[in-house]
Length: 75
Figure 1 (cartoon, rainbow, N blue to C red):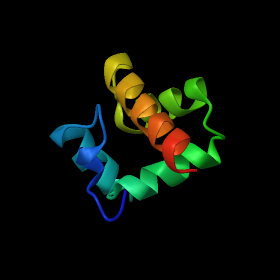
Figure 2: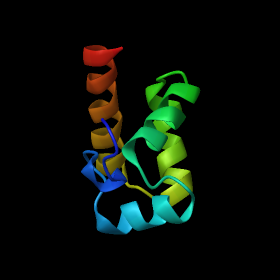
Figure 3: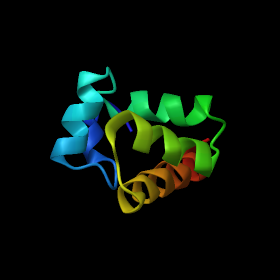
Figure 4: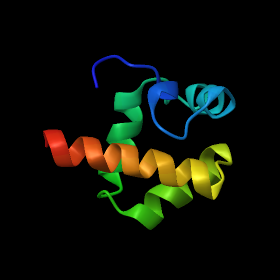
């Protein structure tokens, strides 16, 4: 994951990336941290994204599965 921008996560485009960065989630690893704090729970993470940056279901779903696949491969 390294030092990648939050917009490199699946489902996170420019507008959502700016909203996340404005709230302190400027890097992919910071969003990964939130994902882990929420215990990799799909519903909790997707609701967090929707509530925090107004992501839609497709965007939240894409981001969740991106992080889940990364965790399955590297943790």
